[in-house]
Image (cartoon, rainbow, N blue to C red; front, side, top):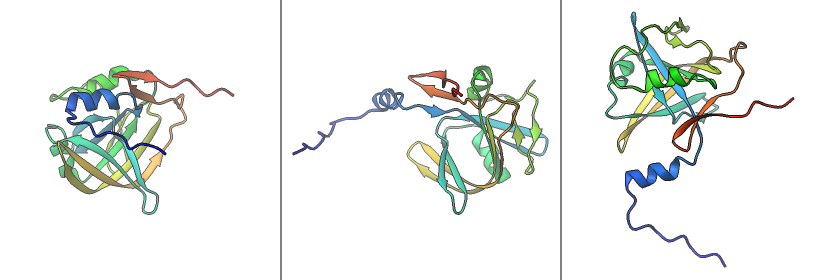
Length: 171
């Protein structure tokens, strides 16, 4: 007979963060452009939600200064970063400022910035947002996606409080 897990009397944010750092997550830059002004932010909580209809999601902090600009456009792209794009991740993880200065990008069909070297690009229309604690769940309807052929196909991951690369596939 299995015993029930004991409830922890108090789970604070720091303890939860430490525990969840053992779960690897892909590193993505969510991007959009409002006319000529591009916006972006790093997200480590990207998830597939539904195949029919095709929906994806991510969580943005309610304190994000980039997300309010992005939400107004009604669309966004998810750029799944490749191994070796640590400096691009650091650029988009910072708060405030023009994160795209010196970054070359191409517009998607919806006008969203697509970053060179990404493992995967997913172009989405904003479908819904919902406040959940200190984050917003952002749901997007997938309009198109592309797997660029010029990359290694190895994503950048966040694990154990640091950026890591998965080992390349053996052939």
